[in-house]
Image 1: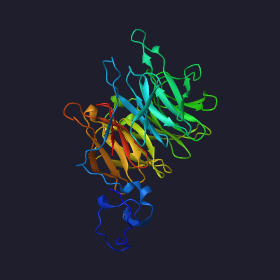
Image 2: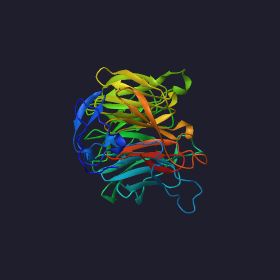
Image 3: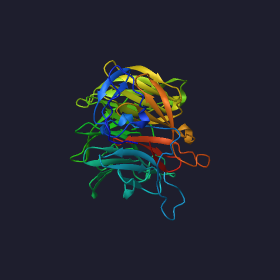
Image 4: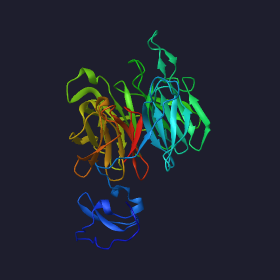
Length: 385
């Protein structure tokens, strides 16, 4: 859909008849962003103009089921390393994180990273994968397979480090993570209230825990970094509280140098993924069918988006739009495109195939500079938009 012929018809102050879907590769055009005209060169780098159509059958990558297993894969976390895409499998059977070629879209290798892998986080050299482990059904609070964090050199998967409680004493069901340029921060989601309110600070050089931050509410989920401060979401006691805001549903802002809690922001129910778009923090609130936008300076919610959302969990920013999957309790079939200029969902894009047989249930998302990759946890596939 992209070609190479320059377009001189779209001038500042004049209306071009060319539609976005007919834009050519390498063209120099003027586009409208948040109501303002801006000159744009190098269209090959301007990914926000890629044409999306509800009528387009989006290319899909299927995650294979290992021979002899009775349970399909459940892809969950996803992250891009600048060349390849990494997808964590939350199945208790596969123990894999998949490395997928960002160009050919082929699975290059399956890296063993433990059972119930949740998130992938890139630190510039290594991909970090959190694994919940397998809790004992006989002795609650103990594990048949202990939780772990695995870091894999993205250029050489034989360079792999597995961190357990021997390295991270407070490790208990690690969930989301974020890298601040020096340290990795991991949410200690936990399985019991005791110890499940911790944010762990890990040194990537020594692969050891160097600090822990006690949060005021249990069950931290996802972690984000805005270039200055760490942000973490906590589910807390959300199931016991009324709509739309619940006691314990928090977004916590932390100074990574001192560990000081700078702010606690009460959110709609079920805060999940944290995203920084260069200006504001965005949070997908799963249980309240909403996405919130937070002012990082005033520490206040400035917008709540609710239209056309159903159990949003993951978030990604493509330089122009915010994207979130409508998981919809495993019945979801669309990804929502949010325009930050109007704070509304402006388009719903379908994901996956065989929707009537098994809804795709889009969960996590990543962006490779060209396409949005959508992890469909329901039918073990990845959709490219």
